Length: 69
Image (cartoon, rainbow, N blue to C red):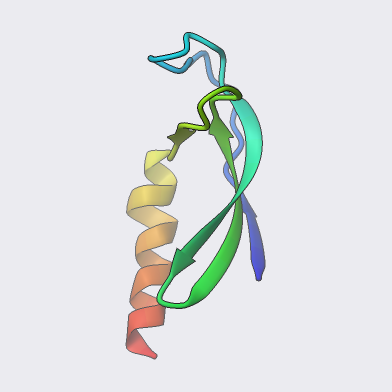
């Protein structure tokens, strides 16, 4: 398992709970590979904030690497 951190100070809050987002570690699974990733999330409902740099950048790179195997 690999660990990646995408923790950034943000004024964003959960739209449903109205609470500020806090750092949390989550496990993402893709093509039978598990990645531990630190993301900002709602402390009550667990809704995650996936930054664009992760969604359009790093996740795309990892997806392409795993699909090429």
